[in-house]
Length: 284
Image 1 (cartoon, helix red, strand yellow):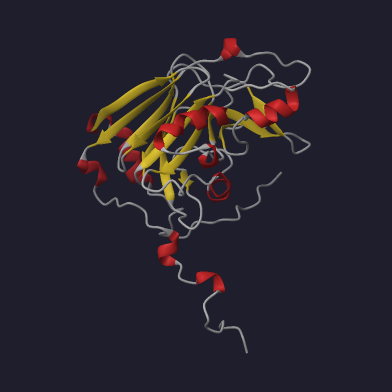
Image 2: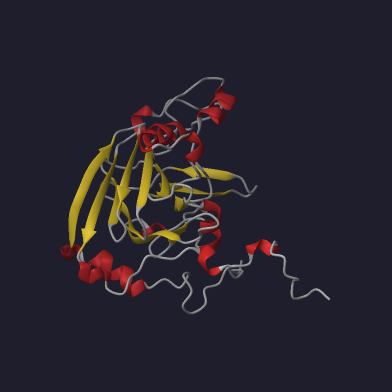
């Protein structure tokens, strides 16, 4: 079947036309970065952390395959946060190196750019599965209760809620996620499916912070998703749950030459959504 062209096309100089040489230098210059922080997120928990703009953070599979649910906010203004739907449209439903994670309206700017992905070679499997998913969202206790009739406090939504509470955020601030290391797709009936996570020990997904960020990650209670979570064959996948690591790096100033923090969309758009008193130009 031939490809149909993407709806959103990058013009020269557009934010979609990412500077691959710049981000490639950041990924490759491992001697020009300094480890600024490192921690492990245990199974079925969540943790939040800050990343200064111009820094890099890396999410790693410490012991083998494990899915992580990632939320991102502007550290200065948590109303600005990852917009999964628009990122799917502007980039792809599954992201990899040089893709950008975009924020919601009226901010609409890249919050982070992916600089390295050790699973980039996974491609598309025999079932149409791809890695680093923006199609789905986080598991939550409400759907779990609806499907199982039981309460469970360690769904990703709940893990993220606990993680951001010390930063003054609530459940209402938790939003649709990037499912890091998660392999998903749409079946022949256009239904969402999840496959076994293909990550190996030491795999990572790395991001460049385009602004000061607050991030939060849940180690999914489904682990590597090799065990059915719902339905007649469902069972507790505790034995396939593993921790996830996070590393934060500062970069030598020389690497950032020519880079500047992205501006907000509302700074360029002055239309006021057509609610200004002037007559629109097409009116008689």
